[in-house]
Length: 169
Image (cartoon, rainbow, N blue to C red):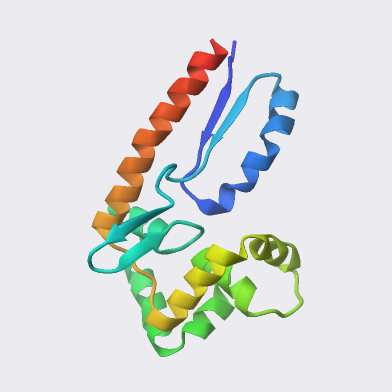
């Protein structure tokens, strides 16, 4: 018999699950725990880049992907080459990048209105990420930053899951 369900996320785009845990728990008839990406590591400080925040499809997530050898470095390089020339074009093509930055900065009406509304609810951090991207003209992917987010978040996730298990057994 299943005693509970744990969802450990590594992507800010999955954070909507947290709002649904009560409903999922009710449907499954077991407790459900959602662990957001990199708990306790909303940001890390890098001597090279300054403070790096974790939100959605941003420097943190790309750095973790690089650390885990999951980043397609060729396509990432092409994206950053385009960003160097025209960062706004990158956000037009891929509005989900940098904390849904394209949805915030490009306020046209289209099929993404619901995403845009959700992004606007968290406008502070998301806007900061998008503005930094426009100034820097690139997304950062750094193995050391990725390691810090991943390893620290994993350690904290283990503690959170351990407490959850203690509560349900």
